[in-house]
Length: 150
Image (cartoon, rainbow, N blue to C red; front, side, top):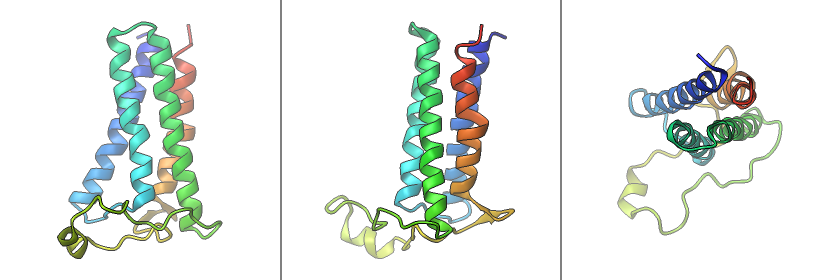
């Protein structure tokens, strides 16, 4: 397996796995996402798309490296979010949806999810913190570097 193939597989596994975990925690365990949780998901969607795009489109290394950078972006957002949850700094959001994007009935049924409260943690690390660790340290950087490994 070449470095490029490994990097692509890593991008697909990390982004796909973290998104799957987010949706399982949401729909199976009832851990509804706050606004900053959603911010962390979007770069993983982009990373999946870029990694898939790299299968057929040249220059493949660039697409995989961009996928790695998208994963790092999600991790950095997760690091910021974790800092808000731990009270290290204040968040920049009201943890609400944009006005006019949701139905009044949905608002009444939706749970209130705060960005500054970690709904779950493992070993004292919140989900946002785990996203930071896995995406920035464990995945994105390795993926971006492996894309250019010969």
